[in-house]
Image (cartoon, rainbow, N blue to C red; front, side):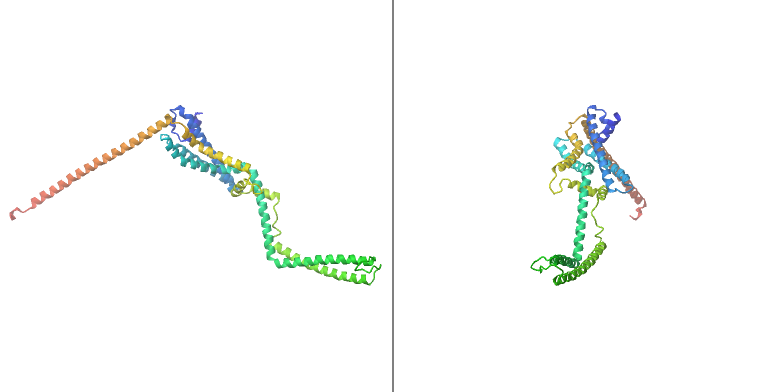
Length: 374
C-alpha cells in the first residue's frame, strides 16, 4: 500500500520526502495523483482506440494503436501533472484562481479530446446503423446521378425511343379495337360501323386485311424498338450503369465495420438528429453528458488543488522556496562582491606594474644621458 501511495504522490507532482513528514496531507495528494493517473490511462485508451481506426485494415494497426496510445497517455499524464503541481498555494485566492484559469481551459480542451474516441466506442452500434443509412443514401444518389447524366447524354435517342413506344401503344390499341369490330361483323352484331349480316363478307375481309397490314407495321416498329433498347443497354453497360447497384446488407455491414475515424466521428455528430432532420434530444443529452463527464474528470485535480486549504506541506514548500530565493540572491551578491574585489586587485596590480615600468624606463634614460653637453 505504501508503494501505491508513493506512486500516486509522484503522479500528483508532490515533493515526496517533504510530504512523508506530514501525514495529514498525504491522502489529499494520493487522491490528486490517482485522478491524474486515471486521466492519463483513459487518454491512452482513447488515443489507442482512435489510432486503431485510423490504421484499421493494416496488419500493424494494433501495434500502432498501442504505441500511440502509450505516447498520448504519457503526454496527457505529464501535462496534467504539471498543471496541478504548478498552482502556487502560497498566493492569495484570487491569484490562485487567476493562475488556474488557463490551466482549467487547457484541461477542458484535453477532456474534449479524450472523450471523443470513447464516445465513439460507447455509441458504436448506433454509429454503424447511421453509417449504413448514409452509405445507402450515397449509393442511391450516385445511381440517380449516373442515370440522369446518361439520359442527358443520350437525350435524342431516348426521345426517339419514347416516340416509337407511344406509336406502338397507339397501334396496339387500334388493332385491338379493329379486331373487336371484325368479330362484330363476322358474328352479325349491328353497330354504326358493321353491317349486322352474319358471316365472313367483303367488309370483314377488308377489315382483316387492314388488321394484317397494321400488325406488320407493329411488328416492324417493335423490332426497331428492340434495336434501340439494345443499343441503350449496351451504352449503359459501357458507362457502368449496370454495375452501379444498391449495397446489400452484407456489403453495408462490411463498409460500416471498415469505416475510418472521420466517418465515425461524423456519424456520432449526426446521432443528435433524427432521420427527418429533427433534433434527437435524448441522444444529444447522452453524448453531451459523457463529454462533460470527462471534462469534469480532467478538471477535477485542479479544482481539488484550488479548494484544498493551505496545509503544513504547502507552508514548508513555500518557506523552502523563499529560502532558496534568498540564498540565490545572497550568492549573487557574494559573486558580485568577489568580482568587484578581484577587479580592484587586478587594477591595483596592473597600476603598480605600469608605474614600475615607467620608473625603470626613466632610470635607463638618465644613465644614457650625456651630461657633458650641458
